[in-house]
Length: 357
Image (cartoon, rainbow, N blue to C red):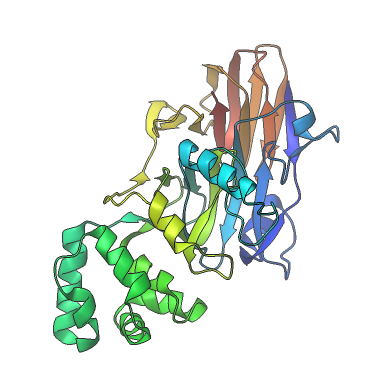
């Protein structure tokens, strides 16, 4: 079975008035359109072309999103499965309402993510090497006394995290904004926010279309600007530490953060002409880039589990060994069941295929 999917766009303050409307063929609006979800998550389940919620036909352990950021998202991280289960049990036993602003854990799942750039995309993700951080702080302190306290000693990553939230002054944050384009940009949106200090510790990554970042559990990150396709485990567990008007829990964030330097940028591995795989080492889902052309049919690809496909340019036709087919144009999505084990792709465009476990 292959069925087209639709869902209502979701509005958040950090969204864009034009990126998703341009992708899906809508007129630009005054509303900040941030996401469209394709999956069976109860907060926003996709709807099939026959008008039936996809959740009435299946339950997926992953979901796919269009995500558009015109302004920075929060500094955040996601828990492991064990941390999610413990956190959910604790909040349930404490009677925290599921819709309370302070509620963190909504389910018992982890939320590893991969974001693939559709447009140029700016993102913060993973701690920079500690020697690089300490060296830059010493250089800043040599020019500006307001960095002296932060630059003292050879702090480790955990030490810098603690310093930012416990000891970093508004004066030092102001100095950082004077010396750093990134800090200046973030300060415009969130003045005197300690998340600006945390951003200094992270890799600033500029993705070209098709490049990606993988965000495992415990990885601090923040999306800044751009349009992308996001694939993740079906969860809504987020712990925030700054750059947001939403609830922030620094102690819980510290508890789940992995204090290791990490550069999560990756590109796809070519499997054959027109078919590429993003190696993320997860059992929850696998992600492929599909680019057929008039000269290149991608035939008889094994489909071991249910899948979601989204088209981001041109048009791509997916067919299966049961002679079912759908043609997606830019901005469209479909669900592919695995009752037919082989799928093929034709057309001239780019699509992303997420396959469950």
